[in-house]
Length: 365
Image (cartoon, rainbow, N blue to C red; front, top):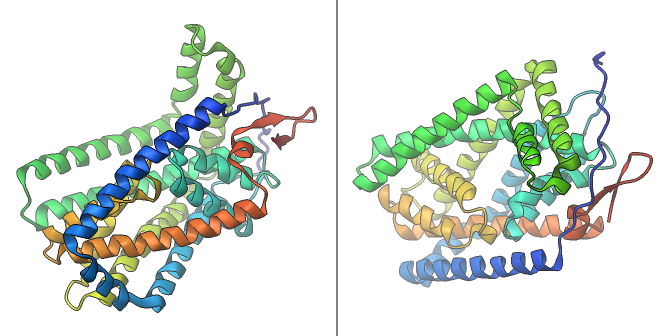
């Protein structure tokens, strides 16, 4: 155990979703869902219900069981990376992080802006093991590694897409810009950690001095500072964990390629190549990042898969079918996450309302 003193956990203000915020969130969810359903319906109609139904039938229940199991392995990989992102005197076990990751995935998939509270929901799920600020900082640390490996994955996918196929000039420009932006983001991320730039807390401090959101930032800016210190403390104290965590995150993406390759081989006799699987998964990962606001990514996932499928000449029907089958897997694990949420008595309010008791331990409303 390190001899460095552990900073005290700060007092957190109580935050609560007002009825107006909840109403706006529901309205946004309805709008995004309607748009997604419309887009989904268009692609199903364009491809043909009969062709999609035939492909799904060929895939079968056994095939669906395999991809459900594969995704559980992917959940375990990210859960293991999370356990390595927590440092002394705190620790998390796989039996703590696996349910928490499933809960986070359910929150992220089911509601608009769910990505904004998925991290908090994970921290709430492990609150009996570690303080909230430790849970959040460890999640942020794991997300940094995930973002790094995902960026490399997207760069490789975009570069391969450009070099292997003839595509429209507009898409060439778009992908070139995307590659440059991702490389710039990766460089910035690495420099931020190496030089330990306290960008978030300094920004909060500036806003506080200028008089913006003074009530929120009165204690909030100190919370953000401590949050950053936990992340940078991990960098200083456990550099040997970097490679194992990166390998776990890379394996997460590798299993995604395996999943797509398995689906292709079940529904097509000729489309099941490693290149096709790699491109379909890289585009799917990009869509997941860009369109996470759309519940279950309905419609947009089908659009991306259809684009890649037509480019690599395996047929739009194959691409849309892959997206639909994987959406079924998302629904399954979202259902599992919802059951865990209900069993633990968690609600959206209990995740967004946070307060401190007098003895310094977290409680949730």
